[in-house]
Image 1 (cartoon, rainbow over the protein chains, first blue to last red):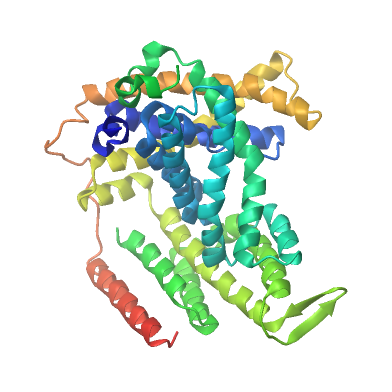
Image 2 (tube, helix red, strand yellow):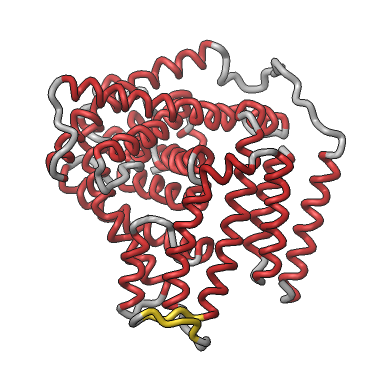
Length: 202
Length: 240
């Protein structure tokens, strides 16, 4: 337990270099989904991957940086949601610790837990900072739940969860598939994995 | 550094103030700064459309579904816009505008390496600096690499259009090379950094370029903090 969740021990040279790469993977994947015109984002796979390789804290930093950098480059309204992505990184790290990325079906379960956490953290941010709207397609879903009599926070939460669920499910499964195929000789260079070999992906 | 404090302070102000009039004052002040910095047009080009879209959605959500007593502004078929909801929307848009615009000024007028240098000289860890810089540099690079992978796989006959499921299947051959290629580079970069002594603690660091600081910067910082305190006091007293 201590080794895996040790904050200072997590940030080895390999982990520090991994973080920008994970963020860049998020950006690159987002580009691919836009190119393929898919209704998903896939911009958390890099974060999940960081969690698998280097633990929750590294993943949290990767998550925060993803939003800060995307915010700085394109849309500044992403920045408040850095908190959400940090929570997703930490959650993914905890899921990794309990072996959720060792089997396909468990990775799918993880793909259901992540959007739950994400929506729980995002909804208050959306309501407090942006008054309930996000400027994306999920606003239509929010309006639907509002029309059926929900309170604003509840409607935003449900909309966020529904929109994220497919995205996180696919992200989770892809991260599992990628992690599964990383050679042991490579993953052994990350401390979180070597110290908790049984907790990591086979 | 002062610029960063400015953006942070503006965000804090806009979150603390609840009256639309106060928010309007903030928004106007940011507009002035945008104009002074000469980035007003760039700002309009890149962010304005998004803000308009967000505003429309907000208007719908807050205007129609605002709960509580309010006069009805106008009726459109089965829905009706309420005055309070519209007022809330106006306040929200002004607030978001202030936040977005103040950060935008900082981004457009500061080179990332200057920002990182200022952060490190203010006492931040060089690791934090590396993270910020490397991420800013790598992300566009990775987008470019993704574009190359798409081209490569299409030249091998990959379908990138068709039904949603067809496109989903196309995801795998596009995503896998991106992952493995970039994960490979992690090790090389880590070694390069270690070889240059990046992870040695307690070394003395010199800078290639000195930052030039205007003499009035410290005064401006004091002013920003002072205004923040005043706003907090006013907020506690319930005036803004």
